[in-house]
Length: 218
View 1 (tube, rainbow, N blue to C red):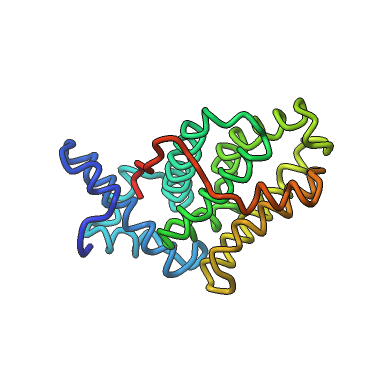
View 2: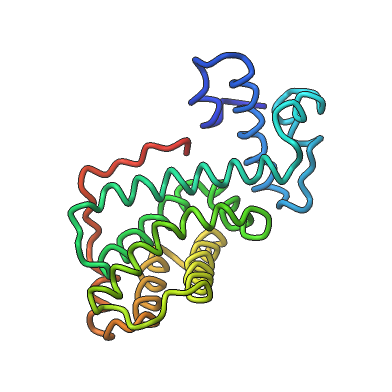
Protein backbone atom coordinates (compact mmCIF):
# COMPACT_ATOMS: atom_id res chain seq x y z
CA UNK A 1 0.00 0.00 0.00
CA UNK A 2 1.49 3.29 -1.09
CA UNK A 3 1.65 6.14 1.42
CA UNK A 4 0.10 6.19 4.86
CA UNK A 5 -3.65 6.28 5.27
CA UNK A 6 -5.46 8.00 8.13
CA UNK A 7 -6.12 4.83 10.15
CA UNK A 8 -2.48 3.81 9.74
CA UNK A 9 -1.33 7.27 10.77
CA UNK A 10 -3.44 7.15 13.90
CA UNK A 11 -2.03 3.72 14.85
CA UNK A 12 1.62 4.46 14.03
CA UNK A 13 2.77 4.26 17.67
CA UNK A 14 0.65 1.21 18.55
CA UNK A 15 1.69 -2.45 18.62
CA UNK A 16 2.15 -4.34 15.36
CA UNK A 17 -1.27 -6.03 15.34
CA UNK A 18 -3.01 -2.67 15.75
CA UNK A 19 -0.95 -1.18 12.91
CA UNK A 20 -1.78 -4.13 10.64
CA UNK A 21 -5.49 -3.80 11.40
CA UNK A 22 -5.27 -0.09 10.60
CA UNK A 23 -3.54 -0.79 7.25
CA UNK A 24 -6.33 -3.18 6.35
CA UNK A 25 -8.95 -0.54 7.15
CA UNK A 26 -7.18 2.06 5.00
CA UNK A 27 -6.90 -0.47 2.18
CA UNK A 28 -10.60 -1.30 2.49
CA UNK A 29 -11.53 2.35 2.09
CA UNK A 30 -9.49 2.58 -1.11
CA UNK A 31 -10.96 -0.59 -2.58
CA UNK A 32 -14.58 0.17 -1.62
CA UNK A 33 -14.33 3.69 -3.03
CA UNK A 34 -12.73 2.48 -6.26
CA UNK A 35 -14.65 -0.75 -6.94
CA UNK A 36 -17.83 -0.44 -4.89
CA UNK A 37 -18.74 -2.81 -2.09
CA UNK A 38 -20.12 -5.65 -4.20
CA UNK A 39 -17.11 -5.83 -6.51
CA UNK A 40 -14.54 -5.44 -3.73
CA UNK A 41 -12.78 -8.57 -2.53
CA UNK A 42 -10.90 -9.64 0.57
CA UNK A 43 -8.01 -10.64 -1.70
CA UNK A 44 -7.73 -7.10 -3.11
CA UNK A 45 -7.99 -5.49 0.34
CA UNK A 46 -5.21 -7.75 1.63
CA UNK A 47 -3.08 -7.03 -1.44
CA UNK A 48 -3.47 -3.27 -0.99
CA UNK A 49 -2.50 -3.63 2.68
CA UNK A 50 0.51 -5.77 1.70
CA UNK A 51 -0.57 -8.75 3.81
CA UNK A 52 -1.70 -12.29 3.00
CA UNK A 53 -5.37 -13.26 3.07
CA UNK A 54 -4.87 -15.22 6.26
CA UNK A 55 -3.79 -12.06 8.06
CA UNK A 56 -7.02 -10.36 7.01
CA UNK A 57 -9.08 -13.10 8.68
CA UNK A 58 -7.09 -12.76 11.89
CA UNK A 59 -8.52 -9.25 12.22
CA UNK A 60 -11.90 -9.39 10.46
CA UNK A 61 -14.50 -12.08 9.93
CA UNK A 62 -15.31 -11.01 6.38
CA UNK A 63 -15.71 -8.06 4.02
CA UNK A 64 -18.92 -6.94 5.73
CA UNK A 65 -17.16 -6.74 9.09
CA UNK A 66 -14.35 -4.46 7.93
CA UNK A 67 -16.74 -2.26 5.94
CA UNK A 68 -19.02 -1.84 8.94
CA UNK A 69 -16.15 -0.93 11.27
CA UNK A 70 -14.68 1.62 8.87
CA UNK A 71 -18.01 3.31 8.16
CA UNK A 72 -19.09 3.23 11.80
CA UNK A 73 -15.92 4.93 13.01
CA UNK A 74 -16.08 7.66 10.41
CA UNK A 75 -19.77 8.39 11.02
CA UNK A 76 -19.39 8.27 14.79
CA UNK A 77 -16.38 10.60 14.90
CA UNK A 78 -17.97 13.21 12.66
CA UNK A 79 -21.42 13.17 14.29
CA UNK A 80 -20.05 13.20 17.84
CA UNK A 81 -17.76 16.15 17.27
CA UNK A 82 -20.27 18.23 15.36
CA UNK A 83 -22.76 17.66 18.19
CA UNK A 84 -20.16 18.70 20.75
CA UNK A 85 -19.47 21.92 18.84
CA UNK A 86 -23.16 22.91 18.93
CA UNK A 87 -23.63 23.12 22.70
CA UNK A 88 -24.26 26.87 22.36
CA UNK A 89 -27.09 26.37 19.84
CA UNK A 90 -30.50 25.82 21.44
CA UNK A 91 -32.80 26.11 18.43
CA UNK A 92 -33.43 22.64 16.99
CA UNK A 93 -33.92 23.88 13.41
CA UNK A 94 -30.59 25.69 13.52
CA UNK A 95 -28.89 22.64 15.05
CA UNK A 96 -30.26 20.37 12.32
CA UNK A 97 -29.18 22.72 9.55
CA UNK A 98 -25.67 23.24 10.94
CA UNK A 99 -25.10 19.54 11.55
CA UNK A 100 -26.43 18.43 8.17
CA UNK A 101 -24.43 20.96 6.17
CA UNK A 102 -21.23 20.33 8.10
CA UNK A 103 -21.61 16.55 7.85
CA UNK A 104 -22.01 16.72 4.07
CA UNK A 105 -19.07 19.08 3.59
CA UNK A 106 -16.73 16.98 5.74
CA UNK A 107 -17.67 13.83 3.84
CA UNK A 108 -17.22 15.64 0.50
CA UNK A 109 -13.80 16.82 1.61
CA UNK A 110 -12.72 13.18 1.74
CA UNK A 111 -14.49 11.54 -1.24
CA UNK A 112 -13.35 8.00 -0.46
CA UNK A 113 -14.92 8.25 2.99
CA UNK A 114 -18.02 9.87 1.58
CA UNK A 115 -18.64 6.96 -0.78
CA UNK A 116 -18.03 4.42 1.98
CA UNK A 117 -20.68 6.15 4.11
CA UNK A 118 -23.17 6.09 1.24
CA UNK A 119 -22.49 2.48 0.33
CA UNK A 120 -22.75 1.39 3.95
CA UNK A 121 -26.53 1.85 3.77
CA UNK A 122 -27.15 -1.71 2.65
CA UNK A 123 -24.61 -3.63 4.69
CA UNK A 124 -23.96 -1.65 7.89
CA UNK A 125 -27.26 -0.44 9.40
CA UNK A 126 -25.48 0.23 12.68
CA UNK A 127 -23.73 3.14 10.96
CA UNK A 128 -27.03 4.81 10.27
CA UNK A 129 -28.28 4.06 13.77
CA UNK A 130 -25.25 5.90 15.11
CA UNK A 131 -25.97 9.01 13.04
CA UNK A 132 -29.67 8.66 13.85
CA UNK A 133 -29.00 8.86 17.58
CA UNK A 134 -27.79 12.45 17.22
CA UNK A 135 -30.33 13.39 14.58
CA UNK A 136 -33.26 11.98 16.54
CA UNK A 137 -32.27 14.02 19.61
CA UNK A 138 -32.40 17.28 17.65
CA UNK A 139 -35.65 16.36 15.92
CA UNK A 140 -37.30 15.47 19.22
CA UNK A 141 -36.10 18.81 20.60
CA UNK A 142 -37.71 20.54 17.65
CA UNK A 143 -41.03 18.87 18.41
CA UNK A 144 -40.85 19.98 22.05
CA UNK A 145 -40.00 23.53 20.94
CA UNK A 146 -42.99 23.57 18.62
CA UNK A 147 -40.79 23.98 15.55
CA UNK A 148 -41.50 20.59 13.96
CA UNK A 149 -44.97 19.13 13.52
CA UNK A 150 -44.05 15.79 11.96
CA UNK A 151 -44.05 12.57 13.99
CA UNK A 152 -40.45 11.43 14.48
CA UNK A 153 -40.85 7.73 13.75
CA UNK A 154 -38.67 5.19 11.91
CA UNK A 155 -40.12 6.14 8.52
CA UNK A 156 -39.39 9.81 9.09
CA UNK A 157 -35.83 9.04 10.14
CA UNK A 158 -35.20 6.82 7.10
CA UNK A 159 -36.63 9.45 4.77
CA UNK A 160 -34.49 12.26 6.18
CA UNK A 161 -31.30 10.20 6.11
CA UNK A 162 -32.03 9.16 2.53
CA UNK A 163 -32.40 12.80 1.51
CA UNK A 164 -29.12 13.75 3.19
CA UNK A 165 -27.24 10.85 1.59
CA UNK A 166 -28.74 11.69 -1.81
CA UNK A 167 -27.38 15.22 -1.49
CA UNK A 168 -23.98 13.86 -0.48
CA UNK A 169 -23.94 11.47 -3.45
CA UNK A 170 -24.85 14.29 -5.85
CA UNK A 171 -21.95 16.36 -4.48
CA UNK A 172 -19.52 13.48 -4.84
CA UNK A 173 -20.63 12.79 -8.41
CA UNK A 174 -20.20 16.45 -9.28
CA UNK A 175 -23.88 16.81 -10.21
CA UNK A 176 -24.21 19.80 -7.91
CA UNK A 177 -22.01 22.17 -5.93
CA UNK A 178 -21.69 23.19 -2.27
CA UNK A 179 -25.23 24.54 -2.37
CA UNK A 180 -26.56 20.96 -2.15
CA UNK A 181 -26.09 20.91 1.63
CA UNK A 182 -28.18 24.04 2.12
CA UNK A 183 -30.79 22.86 -0.37
CA UNK A 184 -31.35 19.55 1.37
CA UNK A 185 -31.40 21.25 4.79
CA UNK A 186 -34.09 23.63 3.58
CA UNK A 187 -36.14 20.80 2.05
CA UNK A 188 -36.02 18.68 5.21
CA UNK A 189 -36.94 21.63 7.42
CA UNK A 190 -39.96 22.29 5.19
CA UNK A 191 -40.96 18.62 5.45
CA UNK A 192 -40.70 18.90 9.24
CA UNK A 193 -43.12 21.81 9.21
CA UNK A 194 -40.85 24.84 9.42
CA UNK A 195 -42.33 27.83 7.50
CA UNK A 196 -40.68 28.55 4.15
CA UNK A 197 -39.04 31.84 5.13
CA UNK A 198 -37.60 30.43 8.36
CA UNK A 199 -36.42 27.21 6.70
CA UNK A 200 -34.55 29.19 4.06
CA UNK A 201 -32.96 31.43 6.68
CA UNK A 202 -31.73 28.49 8.76
CA UNK A 203 -30.47 26.55 5.74
CA UNK A 204 -28.48 29.35 4.15
CA UNK A 205 -27.12 31.21 7.17
CA UNK A 206 -23.38 31.00 7.99
CA UNK A 207 -22.37 28.00 10.09
CA UNK A 208 -20.96 28.94 13.48
CA UNK A 209 -19.70 26.02 15.54
CA UNK A 210 -17.79 26.82 18.73
CA UNK A 211 -14.11 25.99 18.44
CA UNK A 212 -14.89 23.41 15.79
CA UNK A 213 -11.94 21.71 14.15
CA UNK A 214 -12.68 18.20 13.01
CA UNK A 215 -10.39 15.64 14.63
CA UNK A 216 -11.07 12.25 13.09
CA UNK A 217 -9.27 9.49 11.27
CA UNK A 218 -10.20 11.34 8.08
